[in-house]
Amino acid sequence: MKVLIVGGGGREHAIAWAVAKSPRVDKIYCAPGNAGIAEVAECVPIGPMEFDKLVDFAKEKEIDLTVVGMDDPLVGGIVDKFEEAGLRVFGPRKNAAILEGSKAFSKDLMKKYHIPTAGYTTVHSPEEAREYLKTARFPIVLKADGLALGKGVLICNTPEEADAGVKELMEDKKFGHSGDNIVIEEFMTGREISVLSFVDGKTIKLMSSAMDHKRAGDGDTGLNTGGMGNFSPSPFYTKDVDAFCRKYIFQPTVDAMAAEGRPFKGVIFFGLMLTEDGPKVLEYNARFGDPEAQVVLPRMKNDIVDVFEACIDGTLDQIDLQFEDNACLCVVLASDGYPVSYEKGFPIHGLETFRDKTDEFVFHAGTKFDDKGEIVTNGGRVLAVTAVAPTLKEARSKAYAATERVTFENKYMRHDIGHAIDEV
Image (cartoon, rainbow, N blue to C red; front, side, top):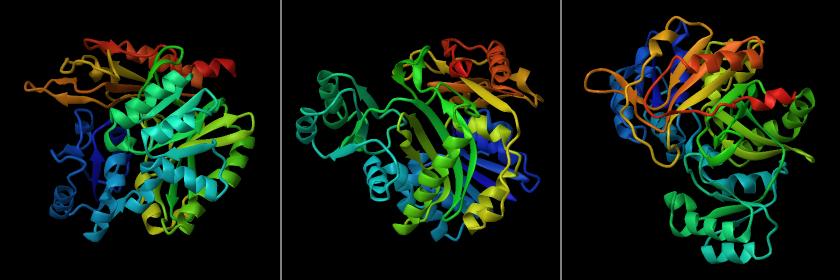
């Protein structure tokens, strides 16, 4: 069969890598793809928001299955467009992708269906925000309502920081219309855990847990990024936590979306906080996480195409989703200056050392071919160097050793990915 993947980052490379392992697939296209994805797929120069061009391409090439990796096209309604054209596509429709597309919607949903989350209010103007903040308890969290590349969350320790945050989100429009409305949320403390899941509208099957590292600097300092590293499974996702979340968070979310006339088919990413009062939802995403996909998919035993199709067909209850009893950790190699400003276009060396490896991978996030056919840096997050091993500590050692084989000018990374596992 022929598969089209929409996107061009590290997550899409991990998806393409997993799809390429399926014996059912003999041709993969990726729009727009990147230099790493080009090793397993034919990259086509169509942007992820060019829905009509993507539909025309899928028809022309007789694509059997399209997989949408990115949040923007999902929230924008790409799945609806493909379905209207009679094409098979994996991902939530627009009215379900709002679970990620609007923080206010997701918070209201959790409140209505008694799904545990932080207390909050939604405000619609800078004046309303500042009036509310006069009586707020600090620290407090400001969240842009819409999509913001994973960076529209501000933790404010003082009224002055909150005032500056309101200005940044609502007046300066740092994230455009995503900041027209903002959610002001109580600050939660505890361990953060990511749990990805496949959903077919009614049935939910959990992937392995993972743990992200959002801050740019060692010791969880610096600005929030799209993710500087990840590992799976999380030792803090215990059987008790799992039982609680299945009963009060996971299935109730799927049921709530169905009850609202928004049946969800695709991947729901649950961002959780393990508070003193029990697990609570930090956020929902309507797709694979990045770099969660890079550490979860290498551990999955199933043919991913079978799972995608079961989600589309509503037969996920017939899938026995299984993961290896091992561990995976990835370290993101970024461009120095990310997430603010950075230079691109530097040649990358050492990628060939990962060829034919079955326990070490390098997933490309921001790369491209230059005029000479060389692979060069093309983004803030450049590569996710990933290793699989029997234990998390072994995976960490292997991943960090592997990062030394890759070089490019202005290479930057955190040196403490997985630091939390030392506390277990």
